[in-house]
Structure formats: structure tokens, C-alpha cells
Length: 357
Image (cartoon, rainbow, N blue to C red):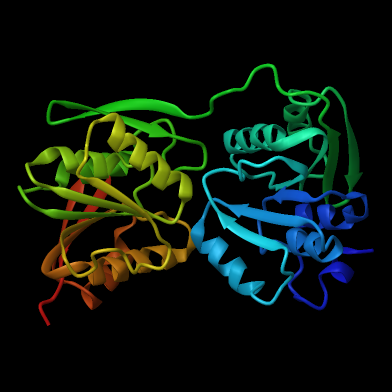
């Protein structure tokens, strides 16, 4: 049974190569509880749910945008298919864990997910891990640290590994880390995890945004795309009576920001997992802060500009940092008044005022 045969008629969109390897191995998958991830639209999870109607199949995404897109795609899919957005795989015992990885993925995040997958497996359960790199060695080396033996199958499109759990891990590695930075003399502690923007360090753009922002007492501040919470935590420490709301589409980012607030004793920081831009308290913020990513052809940048405008009160200000100012110079005037730009150490911080119309 091929990948396309299993997925039809639910969708005509083919899975990525690494996920297709999992789909093609579906005849070897059995159990009542399956956990997996997906680089695409949960094609393996949907195929497994259809093939195993008595099993519960959960596909977990770190990013809510991707999770929402997938949930909508399978809105009329198998009843036993669950699409989840969370910082980790569900804390449940599973018979099967299926993990497709990209050769260009983040190594530390891959190791973290593999270890978590091993922890979720029951003794005797199986892990199916795949990569889109046909000459892969690295993923196999990571699996060898978790399983004493496994099967390796090489295909023109990638490699599939199948391993059986024979015992719990003797040593569990903690992939999260703490780092600290100073802002106006105060030491601020940050927690970060693999998969979160600027893991293990303060981003240079965030540093420039922090140095540029002016926070006054009583301000309501919004941090759009908070990552590990560096900017939000700094803003929360600046003045009395400040309320900071941090939002991100990445579940781990929201988790890290809230834990960072707790570590620093900041009761004035709230957080929200949100990918659609309709933030809690929209229309009431005095200041919005943003450090948009550079990928996705400025699609995310435009989302940040639009969401920021909707979140600000009339007359509220947006501060945004970038290394690529041309696009913002052309597009910010569509949404904001009084555009100003300051250059700081190779970065450009844009200031814009929400119109009072």
C-alpha cells in the first residue's frame, strides 16, 4: 500500500518524503495509542487513524498556525484523529511514536523530541523515525543513544529507522537552558528551549529593540512574537504599574515566557498562544513591540504589522526591529502614521503611530 493510496480520497496533497516513509510502513504499525509529529498536514496521522479505527492517534505541533491549518484540513477526517498544539508530545503512554525529521532541521530540537518520544513509549512499544536524507548517519547516531538496537531501511527518498523500547532511559537530558542579561542595571533571567527563537542567547535584534524602547509607568505593552520572552521581561521591569502581554504562535515560546516571568518574580506579565492576531485586550495597548522573523517572504512581517495596529489604541505606538528596512519603508505607511527609523548597530528600529481614525 503506497502513501498516495492510503491518503486518498481525504487529500490529494502528498506528504513530505520523510512522512511518506512512515505512511508506507503503516502495515507494521499497531496499537491503541499513537503519537506523532508532522512537517506537513498530518498525513501519517490521518492514514494511521483511518487504518486503525480503534486507536487514538495524536499529531502534535509546536506551532499553532500549522496546527490550526491541519485541523481545518482534516475537519471531516477520522473521528479518532487528534490535532494538538503543545510544547511537548502528550504526557501519555503510547504503543507507537512516529517522528519524521528534515535533514535541515534543528539538531537540538530533534534530540529533544526523540528523547521525549522514548519516554512516552511503553516498554515493548516501537518508535518509527525517518529523515529525508538518503545517506543519513546523524539521526541514526542519535537513536543509538536511546535504543540498544534498531533497524535501518534506506530508500531513494530518505531513511526509516524502527526501534523497540526495552527499558526506560537511565539518564534523561534536560535540553532547556537558562541565561541572563542586564537591562538598565537589572539582571533578568530567561528560560529557553529548543525550537524557541534565540535559544540559549539574547538575539541581537531584541537587544536593540530593548535599548530603543521607552516604557512609562502604567503602560499596557504588547510583545508580538515573544520567543523566550526577552523583550517582554525587560519591558515588565522598566516602570511601575506596567502590564505586559506576550503572544506567540509557538507553544514552547509561550511556556518559556511565562516561566521566565515566574523566575523573575514578575506578576505583571501574561502570555497567550495565538496565531490569528486577535489578541486579548486588542485596541487597548499603548505600545506594541515586534522582532519579526525573516522567512516566509514577509508574510509574517505583514501579519505583525496588521495585528499590531489592531491591538494598539488610537495614538498607540509600534516599535519594530529589522535588518532589512526596505520592505517596511514601503509598507508601514499603509497602516501607521509618523513613521520614523533609527539605526542601531546594523539594525533598524521602526516607530509608527496607530492612526486615530
